[in-house]
Image 1 (cartoon, rainbow over the protein chains, first blue to last red):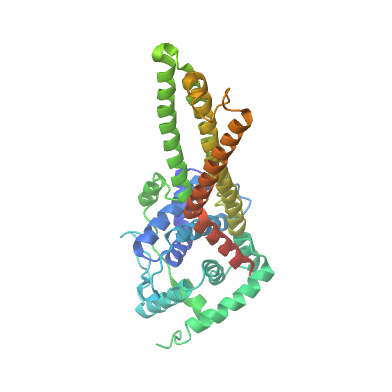
Image 2: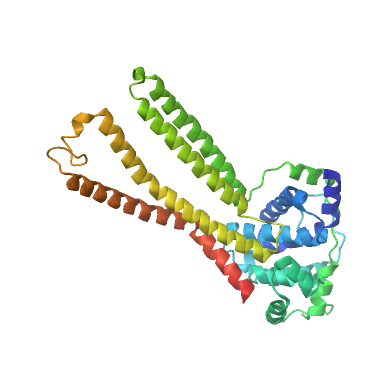
Length: 171
Length: 207
């Protein structure tokens, strides 16, 4: 894959990387560093990508492996109130297409709730919200589908509790 | 918030494309991954050891009319041992991560390799002490023979073999044990938390 093709792939899948950075980086600076590290790891590994799975599946794997490893290194016990919930803006070239402030607030609340989950649960819920099937989730995470279903049920309960006072479209 | 609402909120976001120049600039940056840092540090250590040990070995080969050539050989041998040590560590570090693999198998690989790495670190870090003592003993035996009659560490007319063996056994056992305890504490400090975290992540995945 040439540099130009790689850049196009990153641009096409940047949403995945941004979501992962937002979930695993606690501060704006963490997220910027993590974004760069994921791109570096993807570039280093792209020569080994044989196309046996979808590019996005491979990208999820590299990004999650990097994010969870990075998170473990930088783990700091920031209280939830101090976790930044702003949208990921790597630089001024990121434009915010969604100008709906209420929706942005809801999104921030959802991210804040997911941020309180353990690292693996965050990955599971992110893939679930990205509409991945259990088979695809197994392909990315390596957790078998039965285990994922049980885990997802537990996470749904936790998320309902964390967002119980928030209603979508009623604010 | 209901789950269907969460999906709506989640999928709402659409970011503008990142400038391709910014991505291209990122490609030239060094990785800040801990494994990459460890490999860079290791390469630096290797260069320092090659130059310092090489210089000392060359000095003993050439100086003192080559009378202390054996010490030069000793340093050359130590350099070979260190090189093996560095290459083995580098190999383990390069095997430690597979970012394109499934997350669970990557963490299992990391844990397995890191445990081997720590074991190698502990064994080699401890073994260096008896090796150095024996080395020093041999060099002094050949280069300072007047010591033979003065110390319990060499067999002589006044020092029977059993005393000499006992002295060395005590010296090596005590020094190796102290080194092993110190090394174990150091290795635990360096990698203990990392290993525990990996175990914790795998436990989360298997729950």
